[in-house]
Length: 357
Image 1 (tube, rainbow, N blue to C red):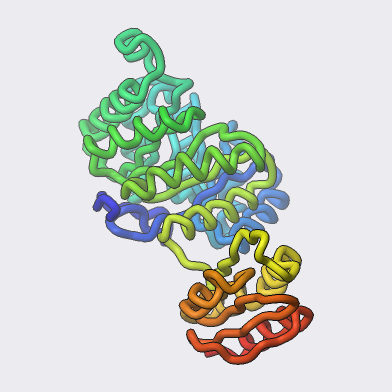
Image 2 (image 1 turned 120 degrees about the vertical axis):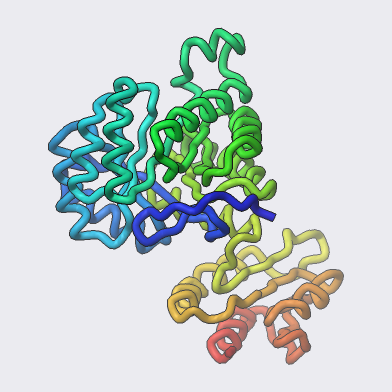
């Protein structure tokens, strides 16, 4: 069961307080290039992104947020480092949330100015702590970067922000080391009641980064920790969103419109199950999108390779097939329906799916 945290609003998206875990990503376009940034945000939204962050390295980028805001439907988070004036400008130009690292924003008064402006507008501020930016005294105290060091840095920073009469806070603790990040988030979650943004920073490529993200983010979610997340991958940010959805589905926090279950195959399999499942997976995508858009109840489709577990698994699904020698026994609503040749399995299942409701 997820920990109940304070709820804040990023635009129209709730974070914490029992709200569904939201998916974030970050544009890798030049924010000053409004057209390219808007196009990428539109692609992210179509993929299922719910909150998007843009880098704001200078005043021109901050001003561009105003044009971007008018052209997109996702809440915008301004990513600010070093210059507090960029945070103020980003808010003036419509940012729905500010991401800062209080350690590099320029001192107490400048931090206070950012928080005061956010409070006036009712905007949340994400307080980010990374393994690469810990305070020198904390590094000295713990002899380097440790989970305890990250957690103490986050708690200390939150207390500073609270002392400035600001509580619309989202906390982020990230490391590229999966175990370190997990332990740090777990420790901070026990000490703070603010929503937690989770992820594995600098996770890597689409291949290696997916594995690290699945373990790091999945472990936290299964421990009831995390209110919003980003999968950080080197590449097209749309891939981050698609994989974030898969992690949430695997953790049982979301369900696909059509949940495809298939067995790993073994020596008893007497059809080309790999080809059958691959074709089904590709051909159900339009149906998945349509069902999701219509808000219909999720369905389960089981494609099993033999008679050992096949009938049981397929029978428990909404519909499915248990394969035999060059054939498959179709199931609908838990009941066997008919046997079809191997070449007719895919079209027969698709026809059943189309007719189902």
